[in-house]
Length: 195
Image (tube, rainbow, N blue to C red):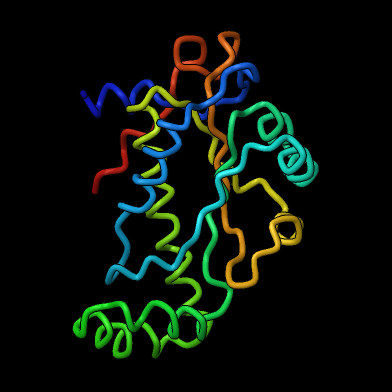
């Protein structure tokens, strides 16, 4: 595997082939990848929905802004969720952490207050998102990260007591006519990012 080549060819898919579905083996690999994602002090303040049923996708698509068609035609939608409550995070995750991690949390993270801890937890979810988006093309799976979703509506549809949605990813296989693929629309990236 050449990771540089993989990232050069990876792109945000705009059109999916709705007839192509991910296999159970691929889904199991994705579950393992998400479980292996790193997080600060191994906090793992997340939970993931991997959705394929057409009814749920149709309901979510109504609240997916410009991503509506992608949600409908992609094989699966992954919703990355974060703990709704700092208290629940502290009750469920802190006891599972090493003594050193607990000490770090109490001395460095908790003093930031409720909003600071929520922000810290959300950033951990984005680490998992980055790992997922890097891993998927190595498996030949196309994806679309989506912040263009109505989070309150997603939350109501998914209805998790302890978690709330933060970001979603459509995944599947591209439509061969997708105009956004690099062979049709070359990537544009900054090269002046190194200080």
